[in-house]
Image 1: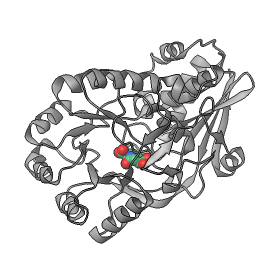
Image 2: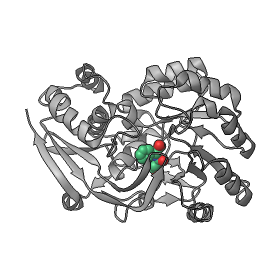
Image 3: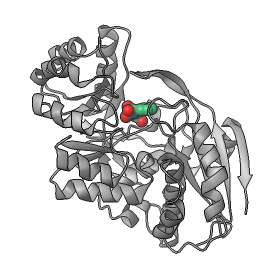
Length: 369
Ligand code: NPG
């Protein structure tokens, strides 16, 4: 298949509620969308890069530059029989997985459509719904945190993840456990601690958390392994796992017991699949994370989460947890049992609301050969 040209766009979208993590507060999201034109048809993808270099060195701006300057010129106009061919052309560009992933995922969805299969089936998944959870940001007070959790539980979410940071951890988790002793609960630190905090983090052990996500810095595989020897709560790695090689190293070192796979973070579906398989061979479950995506990235995450070793609920919440109106039709809604239905249409499986995308666009450019 030949990508004839690619349109890049940045949208401006307001989150229904500000989202606070150990990185800071986010109110607006600026999703970078790509639209591949193949044989006169449009295939959409979403880049998960953030507005600033906090979660990763990649940003909306760097991804735009990489796509325009290096990645798209190598693939536009080339005959690409499969994803391997695309990965080979992208390989000389070091890193920049988020920039690469949006093209890889849109191209994979195009291949699925061409093969007349839903993306999930094309990737090798077999489920028609995926279990999901919700990620709740740091709140101003414990009362607000408990209220936010109560709201999401009443909406049907079955797994609650809360963001923590020094000063908002043992006390906050303790208060949640007092109010909700039985819920499936986990914490995400987004790298806010160091190994010196091991004894402090061990205090979380008494709360029976499903896992503690990314307590230390992304590069700290060795320190995560040391921390895992000092705490009982299973460590989950997110930012630390940028590739299948990182997953292999993490398994070998005992740096984690769970991996959060975000296809955008690792360069796309193919690398996600490799990480999935490494974890499966090690008997380690994975789950699908989220990056406050629009329905386009969400459709990709839902499809990926149908693979067999996605054995824990993901951060793939319903469209209404983020946006007043999602840019896809139908939007993703929460079903009974805290699940999301997997689209059954061919390809990406959802229709992009082009008029709405147009209204939300703050920057656009067509990249041709
Ligand atoms: O529901 O999409 C979602 C958000 C899930 O907490 C979530 N994502 O570290 O995993 C993360 C975190 C994040 C969000 C990180 C935005 C960076 C930006």
